[in-house]
Image (cartoon, rainbow, N blue to C red; front, side, top):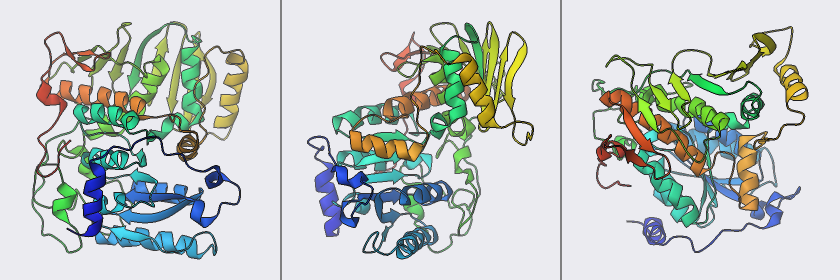
Length: 443
C-alpha cells in the first residue's frame, strides 16, 4: 500500500470537523492560480467530458482525473493539460491521472470532487469524498439503491459538505416556469401527472467477450457481482454514446432510474414534495409490463409512468406539458403557449416570457432560480448553502425511482412512509432497500 492510500484510509476514518470555508478570492474576477478551487474527477466517460468542459471554465484548477479505462483516463488528462497550456498563467503544474479514486480523494489540494461513474459506483466515492472533507457534484441518479440514498442524505450535513445532484433540468427555465404554474394553482387542482422515461432494469445476461488491455475490469465491477467482461457495459476507446450498463439491474436501474431521475424529479418539484414522497407504489397490471406503474401521494395525486410528453401535469382547469426545449400550457381547453423543437414561428424564450408576464407576475410561489447547474454548485460552495438539487432532493427523487423499480421487479403494491423513509403497512422487504456488496466494497 503506497503512502497516498495509507493517508486516505487514515482520513476516511475521521469525519471533517467543520465546514470548509474557502477564501472569497477564489471567486474574484482575477483569481490567482493558487487560490482556485482544486477539483478532481472520478469517471471520465461521455457525461463527465461535458462536466469537465463546464468546470474548467470556472475559477477552478482541475488537478486530477480518475478512470479504470486507460484510454479515457489519459484522454481526460491530455484535455485538461491542453486547456491550461492554451491559457498561460491561469494555472501551473499538470493534471494527474489515477485508476483508484481513493488516491485522488486522499489529496489535500483537492477541495471538490465530481463523480460521473456508472450508477453502481456513485455512492462509495461520493461518501469517501464527503468524509475526507470534499464537496461533491454527483451525477444522477444519486444512488444505486435506497440504503445508499439514506446514507448520503445523512452524510452531507454530518460532514459539513455541499452536494449537488446532476439533475440539471431544475436549472432549465422551461421546467421552473412549468412548476411555478402548477405550484401557483394556475391549472387548478392537480389530478394526476404522466411521466415518460422508458422501462425498468433487467438482469444482466450479456455473454463473455475477450478482455482487451487497458481496463481494470475488477475495479469497474466494484461492489456489483463479478461477471465476465462485455464491451456493452464498458465500451473501449473514446466512444460518443451513453453505455448500456444502465439497462442492467446490477449496475443501474433501466430508464426508470436514468430518465426517471430527471422527470420524477420535476414531478416532485411541481407537487412541492421535495421533503416528502409517495405513500403507495403500484405495479402495472401485467407482471411483465414495462410501463403503467404508479406513485400515489397522500393527497391522492397519481404520478403515472407511461409513454408521452416528458412531464405532463393534468389539472382541473388546464394542463402543463414540459420536456427539454419543449413547453405547452393549456388553460380551459385553449393552448396559451406552445413551443416544440424546430418551430420557426416562435421561440421557447418568447413562449416562456408570455406565460411569466400573463400568469406569474404576482405569483406567491417563486421557486429556486438556477440559470446554470454547475454555477449553482460553485456559488453554494462559496456560501455554504444547499444547491438546487442537494442531497435531500436528489435522495428523495432517486427513492421514488427505486420504489417504482421494486414494484415492477416484485409485482407488488408497496406502502411507503416518506417521513420515516421506510416501508409501511406490512409491505415491502428490507432486502429491497440495499444490495449484496462484493468485498471489499460496502456502504
